[in-house]
Length: 276
Image (tube, rainbow, N blue to C red; front, side, top):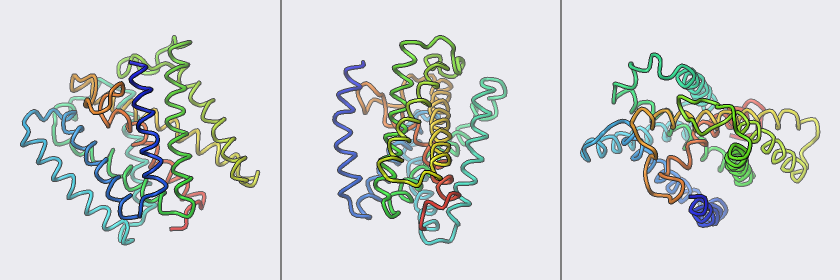
């Protein structure tokens, strides 16, 4: 399993870098849209949709929502800050669902419609956020930093958890995750942030804010991971799909980003990091 994870990562990393650095705005928009819609297809499985027709209908409805939101966001009809502020509220609510699971879960776990709406709340802001970041000046490097931060923290949590993990983080949602793994992720992400700040010659006065945003982003990346784990547990699934050997489905690979990206964008907007 570990070797499969490594091989898959070796293949995905150069592809991700090519898309980040050499795409035109249209190609980047289209590629990220296709990836997000593929994740929506996997989410339809987490909803409990068994028939192909039901999954296709959900995918088509998702595409319509994606188009409507992106059209209004990128044409400034809907303020970007408002979208991500509301998304932040959603993730606080999702955190409460994780903490209390399985108590009081019947209202959403027994409703395909509610779980479908949850999928849109998880995936659409993440996709919009990635495009908002990429389209900024030096946005490619900001997005690269975010990917390294999240996936580096995820790897640190995995290895630290395997070596020293003894106290469960959320045993009813994801028994494999430990508090020690979370601490390892936060320490490692702090180091990544410090290195990035030093290499980018960021004024020292901004370092505490940037490090704080990085740590908060990593914490929410864990929440995104746990939320998808909760959905899989409710659906009786180990993985969201089988697209990526060693990782499961595409959604299993980007679950941390679904919460991390909107929080990172909101923090950047509040700190004045973005031009748009």
